[in-house]
Amino acid sequence: MNQFGDTERNNGPTAFAMRIMISDGPLGVSWQHASETCEFLGDVFALRHAKDGADYTDARHSIIYLVNELLENAIKFRVPGSISVDCSLEGGNFELTVSNDTAPAVAGSFQTLIKEIISRDPGELLIERIEANAADENSSGSGLGLLTLMNDYGARLGWDFRSSTSGSAVTLSTHAALTLN
Amino acid sequence: MEIKTGEYNVWNEGSIIHYEGTLRLSGTDAYQPILDLMQKVLADKPENIVLDLTQLEFLNSSGINLLAKFTIELRKHPDLPVKVLGSTKIPWQSKSLPNLQKLHKGVELVIV
Image (cartoon, chains in turn cyan, orange):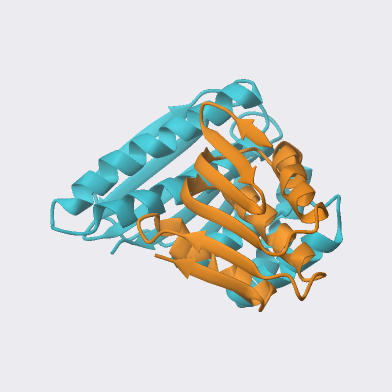
């Protein structure tokens, strides 16, 4: 197994937690599922968080943004198969793991990108990448979502890659943690 | 000019471009019609340009990249006043819009 970044999980077995599975399907349908999933999780976890008098709007938005970005990546880069979404909340610490199978070549180039992302200051790299994207019409802006999460939201991100239990694919789990205000 | 869907609307009134709703498109190609609209406003050689985001509840990172690309294009017009309007009620705006000023010092960012 290859691990990168911050994969440590702090929320315990008594944390408020939920798992959602998104089935395989065409891009347009999956995109809609991702949209509904992040809105639902944003509502449920922000309501839970706001019970203690915290800021509902900010928590809801941060959760939606985080879940949406990781689901967009999972949908774009998965091989046919489901995506699992695990969330938990304990004492203002929101943790998310998104897992899906991906092709070995995709996993390889993603690892190269991750190594660059975690070795640099995210704010500096974000601006550098935006400039590079603007100069190249064909660029898809890969990595900008992750850098935005790290720089603008203070998200702590980690990744692990392991052999899939089904066939030759690689199972990628992306871990994220946010301290909600 | 106007782009209207069930989830979002983008339109211009002269050199003011308004954005409304939730923009969660899948990438650069999907955002192209919106970029075309923005570039058309710029091509009309306006005296100033305003991006009114105060009704834009959500914008994914591909959309933020679109704003960034357009901001970089605006640098080629150093004498053109640029104002970006945001709302404190919409959290992504206070978090991500300051990046536009890092790309173009001439951007006046007003988040109220």
